Length: 235
Image 1 (cartoon, helix red, strand yellow):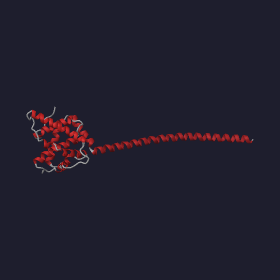
Image 2 (cartoon, helix red, strand yellow; image 1 turned 180 degrees about the horizontal axis):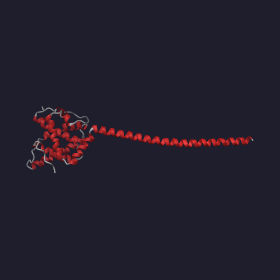
Image 3 (cartoon, rainbow, N blue to C red; image 1 turned 45 degrees about the horizontal axis):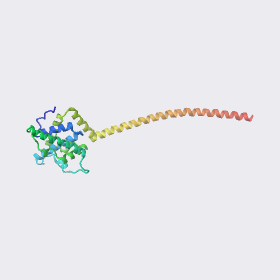
Image 4 (cartoon, one colour; image 1 turned 180 degrees about the vertical axis):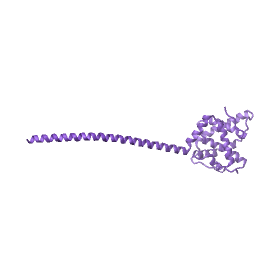
């Protein structure tokens, strides 16, 4: 059962938070933590740009991402992931109206901005953090963290663990660390094989040495036999 949203979250975000929790539980392919962060950054930008007319400190980078262009076109997998979130939002809007607005209805235009969310997700998956994109502005950071805590608290523990695990795997620092450990293991394995080869060579050398000694003894016996035959002929 979904946990209640903390009172620290404004009522106009409750529907969006519940939609996001449902999306994280049911989406296929499964979203990662960076997808969630980018979506919440869109919430923050929509809220504060409307409240402060775009003058709130900490939104400069997000505004730049909103107007930037990505070479090569959109990421199709990411577009599919966020289209599922939008479908959940649309269905929940209809249900909420059928229930006579059981939850406050937020402005859809301020919840989701496609260019901003996609660009933010790409930056986050390349190793940036949400804090760096918010330029450490106190109000945006606090709103972002409150929304993130509200979403994570409403998730089942296994879904939350899966998100955090996927985030570590996608982090370039963790990938480099894993790659480094893998390289060390490969190097250790290589030297282990090298030591085994040396031991085999030593055994072969010892074996060849024994046979060489036997060959020398046989040669000496053959030479002695030839000398005996030669002396016999001379007589």
